[in-house]
Length: 181
Image (cartoon, rainbow, N blue to C red; front, side, top):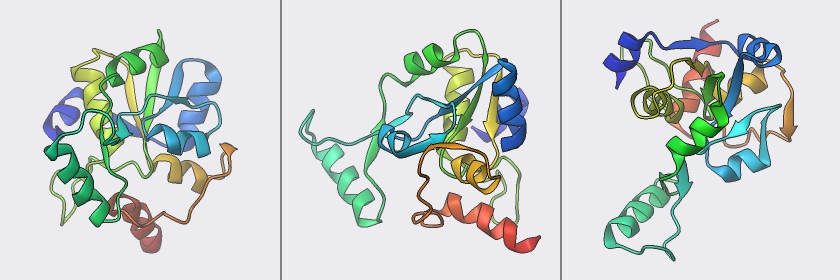
């Protein structure tokens, strides 16, 4: 995935640049977090196209899904699986505009001592899918994700909850970068 995104020239843009593009009408901001996170709070004007959905064991039960849900829950992570409608929802959200994709913390394509191919995230996976599967031509990635938007002091629809920030490895990256500045 990393090699593909680098070869495609995927750019991570600042929250401020993303806001400018959305206001100019050239791009749409697309939240790929689960729908529940979007409903609680999202950057002002963002559309929802969740790449993952919460696993509902009441529909399509299988031992594999049960094992995945149990393993994720044991690690303190909400059990999710890929949204089978993601590509269609993403194309609908994009329309004829460029898309700026974001998740909670964003991940990075920049290599580091511990992560030679950057740090993957849901929004980077969504960027790959947007280009490789949906065939979208104008795709950007929001640096820092929803948390980066919050840190930049940009407006939200709803009240953004920072209590879970740092619970995931991807969220720890922006916090670590802040401490180096």
